[in-house]
Length: 83
Image 1: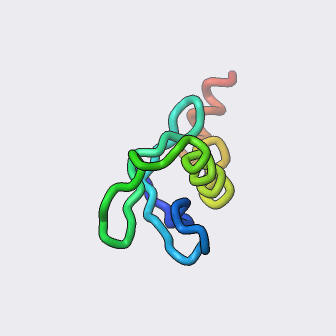
Image 2: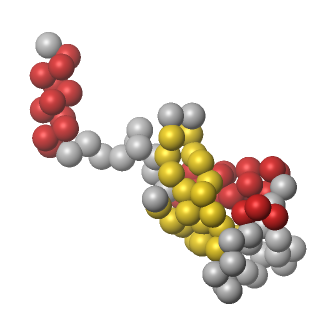
């Protein structure tokens, strides 16, 4: 599980942040929780448009598994599989 600090979608002034727990899945990004400054999970209270805002913010800031650097051992395995 990864986390990233995002703007709180419930804060109209954009002054607060939430810590969003997420994971990369085959279809993209799955939100797990969004913790406010009191450590309360506000994710169940968000509408889909607010969740989409969080996803966009995370996708922009955190490289997904398809863009992360490949370690040397992984590169050797991939090369071996290609031949």
